[in-house]
Length: 96
Image 1: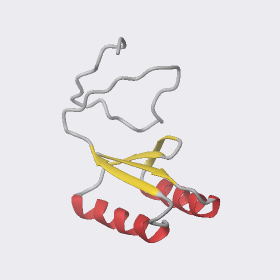
Image 2: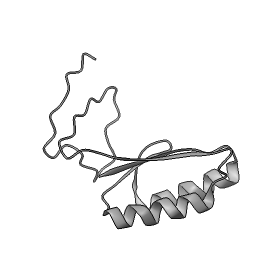
Image 3: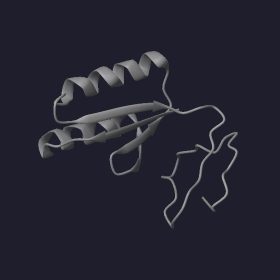
Image 4: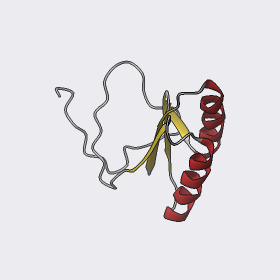
């Protein structure tokens, strides 16, 4: 699983990247998306995003999540329907 996060300064680029991200990943929070993808597939996503941003103004990050993911969740919102990051997860206590 991969997390894609972005901070885009221009509203037009933001809309373009948001639309693209929704086609390749599941929105988790504002400007944060999760996807199951192969190494080759994530390189394609990375290259597509790199072509859409302004290198001097925007920030895009792609994180590979470990197979034994530890998750702490707070607040009333849960993950979007269909997104399961809890397979084989060792949960953290809600006391962080």
